[in-house]
Length: 312
Image 1: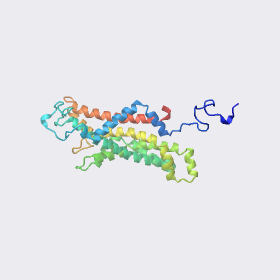
Image 2: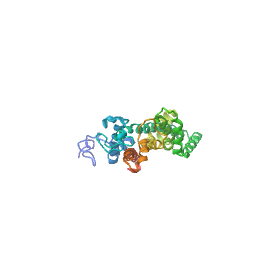
Image 3: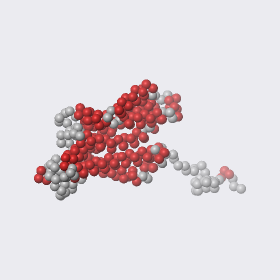
Image 4: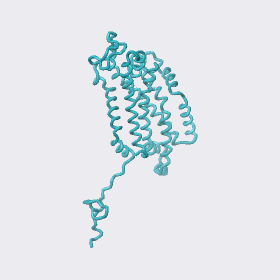
């Protein structure tokens, strides 16, 4: 009979072969982010969205890689001409290169979308974190303010606020539209953050940290925030696509970008005047806008599904 003290893992039932006793390899537990990334890598929609977003960002940041034409150089002699040379999409009613304007218009649309999303993200984070952690009268006041903001018609408030902030006749309207969207689109994020914080602060690790003397600031920043930020990041990803389309809407209505600024919304507004006879100046910027918004929404959906354990 062999000595039980000399039995190795390879001899034990279910043991791992060629692994010495006491050194059985165990899988290291993954975090929520690790599980999400492991799930994302298997999703085709995630990689398709990543490729689309990357291509759009490269086009916005480095437009000269796609065209060397100056979008401001227009000639009425080229009015509504078809594709020719570097003008892959033809010319608009002013004789401007539609392809060059579409490529260069991506920068303002993406910039406004990103900056307004960051602004609304900071505001929503502060409101949601404070309301969820402190509760009581703080939560009551902040939640009622959020409810009031949600009751304001977004488009009407956007028109009024954008006109008010963009009163400078020399401004291109980028700052005004960014502030408008950032100040109006944070409410849903605040409610999502509040719910996540309320759930996280009831966990045992928060109670243990509080018993060890952790201050409220440390509890919020080191323990609660890292464990409740996932759903908030997913929402911001979706909000980015919405803000890009909102900028186009305001520019289409004439209260967005101006004074020579190029954006897809302005191009769509100009193209609608001749949509029946010459649809292409309208179709191309609308197509690029739709693809961009779709890419960010697809990315947000993929990230949301990966962070939701119920959908795995």
